[in-house]
Each structure stands twice: as structure tokens, then as C-alpha cells.
Amino acid sequence: MTLRPVVLPLFGLLVAAGCAMPTSPPSTGAPAVVAALQPTRGNSAAGNVWFSQEGSQVYVRGRITGLAPNKEHGFHIHEKGDCSSGDGMSSGGHLNPSGKPHGPPAGEHHAGDLPALKADASGNATIDSRLRAMPAGAAGFAGKALVVHQGADDYTTQPTGNSGARIACGVITATAPRDAGGRELPLPTGM
Ligand SMILES: [Cu+2]
Ligand SMILES: [Zn+2]
Image (cartoon, rainbow, N blue to C red; front, side):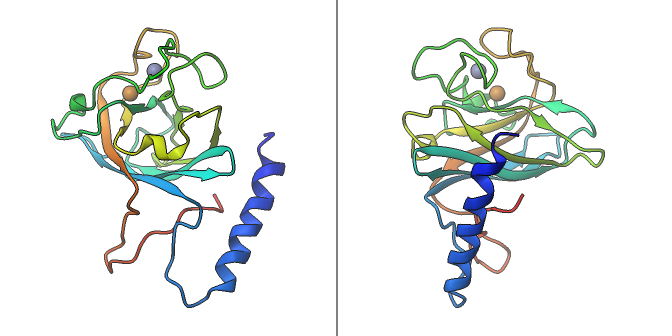
């Protein structure tokens, strides 16, 4: 709720910047790193998620499809940028460079503990959050993995939150994902 007064003027600035350069291709604008989430074996969740540095703040924005309708899903940055195992397990544990317990975004938590995904009746979730105190900034997430879990994060069970199987995984990179025509997908701003 308290994000609105901060975020809306930023949207305006980004839109204005886009209009000033009508011939340029879509670009990420603010410095950002991106994860293109792919479903793990037997699952359907997928989507693109951007972590953008805006001044001293890090925002996470994106859209994920193929989730369980009307369910909450655990959502974390994991420490290894490796989704090759097919079940997401190769991404290791939660990103936790400062040795914190697992927990909710508003309390003590791993750097990789993100606000839960909330799927709508069609199994889609939109993410638009500001992350608290990220010393390494958005760029510090490059080379890690973004993971979506099958179940809800209880934010209590150590060190995982007990949110079950890993249903989507994507390595976080500084390279923007591209559409079928090879154009960079823009950083979402109006979600
Ligand atoms: Cu996780
Ligand atoms: Zn955690």
C-alpha cells in the first residue's frame, strides 16, 4: 500500500523517457537483471521477472503463468545459478550471504526470501514489490537462480519455509529476455 506514492511517479518518469526516444527499441531502462523462469519437469509455471535498481531501492516486477489457481507459492532467490537438474534442486539453498534465518520479507530473512506469489483464478501472478535493504543491489543477484515452489512458504520452517517442490527455475542474468523477433523485452513498469 505504502509503495503507491513512490512507484507511481517513477512510472511517469519511465513512460516520459520512453516517449522521448520513439525510435529506440524497447529497453530495460533502469539497470536490471532478469530471470526467465522455465518449468521444471512435469510442471507448467513460467515467466519473466526483473530486478531493477532504482536509486538505492531494488524492485522486483514480472508475471508468472501456469501456477495453481488461487494458491500461494513460495518464491526465492537460490544461491547457485544452475537449473540444469530438471527438478530445480541444482540451484541449492536460499541466497543467504549474511547468515540470517529464513523468514518473511518484513522480518529477519535470507536475502533470497521474496514476497510470496499469489496466483489468481487463472493461475497467473503479477509481481510488483520493493525489496527491503539489499546491500549488494540488484546486480548482486546476477548468477543466482530464481525459484518458484509448489506450495506456500510458512516463513517459519528452517531453512526453507517448507514450500515443497521447485516448479520453476531460472538463472538470473544481466541480459534481457527477447521475444520471438529478437527484440529485448522491456522492463515492466505499469503493473
Ligand atoms: Cu526456494
Ligand atoms: Zn529463505
